[in-house]
Length: 604
Figure (cartoon, rainbow, N blue to C red):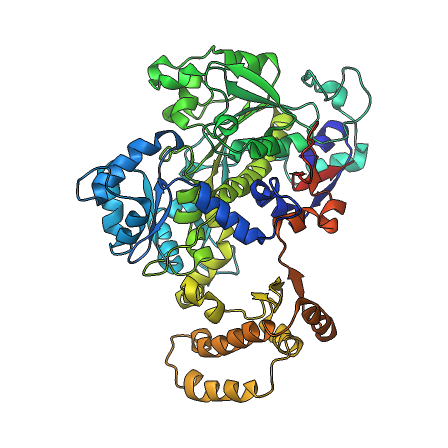
């Protein structure tokens, strides 16, 4: 986005990308509803919210040897449950409850569960443990991976980037973001300097904001003068969150809303969440009944939507609508004709890719399930332990951040060369990209992945990095230890927690009688009994000290830590306020509540 500003004006920008703000933005659906008197931790609030609000036709279910995500659409809950009821209720409808279904699926193999659901026409995605999952995806979809860079031959295959540019099929992609040949642009700048070019671009003039005609002033934000159209579909947040970030970068966003049904996120979802991602956008109401006719032969090229895009000079459309709908609407060419030129950038955010299976909210299966993210967060899946609830909306928001990056690059290319293109952003690829470190470990040594496949009931005992874990004080305060380097942080952490010296005898005996005789395939797995000792002692000693006592001891011992905040505490965190994590909507008077700002901020 800032390169677009430099292209227009010759001026640079300061891009401020903050891990703190990114974390807040990923949790924004929880935090925008937070009040100062809330006490649950952020994690507890997220899991509680997901468990309470997600319907039983859109959630994970643990099986005997894995888990399955049921991907029921929002609008057809009753019809889908009837099919599930027949598949697992001995053929008798209206007999199975969600609780009974959960218990029944724990006794069935994952493949059988998936087969029964698919036979009844219910969309689903299997979730195996991390090592199995990574190998399966690499075997089934090798085009999602690429060879590691030179010098990393032992790594093998790594996931490709989450987005794809251009019109060609995936296996023949050539990204359309090319700059001039190496050295030409730099030599030109050295000879002539940066030349303002805003007057030569004939930028579209939005109704409010943006660059004014004849103005010699450079835009304060990189995408001022750029008009983006957002077409959100169903209850998915990805397109709305992406355009929210584009708007924060200066773009004028026009949100398309069905004049006959309204916005489902506003009418069926949480009103605060709707305001979080849509406040300040211009609304354009249109009858999108073309979506009901999915016959490509009747594809319309002169709909009110296309007319509005042309009249407003929009150069980008961001959408999470199914590809079949976009083809009928005239926004995306049919699959066999995607090699021609386009006038605008069309960014399609989907669970499985632009030509993959269509599902308006497939992040639960694509981002968390298929990529392995769900198994990575929940530990080992399958057996008696129920899979931990996962916040599906977080997958949509993380994908929207990748979409923002891809769309910004495509807009830069459009401003430089005048070409539009399709940008294909996949939740599946985003999830794979998020576990790139884990998949790399698995490629190098599959046994290392076993360290992270821990049943939820044993997670505190077998966590592979005891100095990078959560602890609870005597008075119930949750603390996150930050010692990623175990060798560096173990002794300070043990001293800070006042671990008794007698424990060292237990450690020695564990090494002699459990570690050395252990016939594990790798040295790391041989150390698991020792990790159990350290984890138990750290958790036990933390519960013997109050929060104030821990703070004093940690400061003296040099322990790295941070407070696990409740949503209310997070919204009152001064560091977050100072770094611009909050943004109040116009006219918002809700006491004690604030909205979350876009994570990347650009300053002239």
